[in-house]
Length: 246
Image (tube, rainbow, N blue to C red; front, side, top):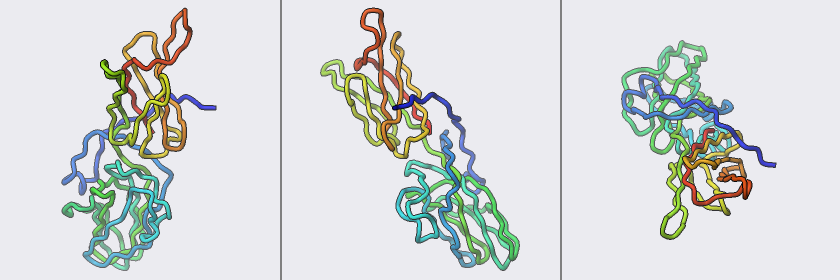
């Protein structure tokens, strides 16, 4: 039995750590928390060197001490909330920033000698979904991802007045959109949709827009009309817009 989802989420303006904000201004994004996931661990970086770490995608992170299927952060993510831990025989500092950008002059965290120091940060992601970490002293690094920031999942639907064909205009996070049947539309999302919330609206009086989880990656939206003669009935010819919040 399908369960309808109601609207409920927080849209936030992204604040990057000073090191990242300097070279990567990012517009309003939505934060999605995840179960803490060790994206990388036990990775030793030599003095003065920079190491990149993969954060997005479902491929194996085993080469960097992470899980075999990634951390569930979609490719659309622009920044990551992460706990960075470092242990070194010497006191020093680390700088985390977007892979592929110039290392900023502001440090992200300091660490003492022979102690494991952990600092929470929000770090912008590079174009291939990676972060870079530079260390002033040889250190062993760990990174636990706790959430990510990504653009909204949203779109709208209308029909071509001449042909009656559906017209979808959606964000890049919706990988495909199709009409399943009269008044029913399927949208494939770039992440698992369990627990996602669907908010749909239409300016047409007497019509409602409802959203459901159809499968692991697919949200189904139904547009229904109601009147005294026909009761409740599915409708194709109504413009609607929607947002999916996960």
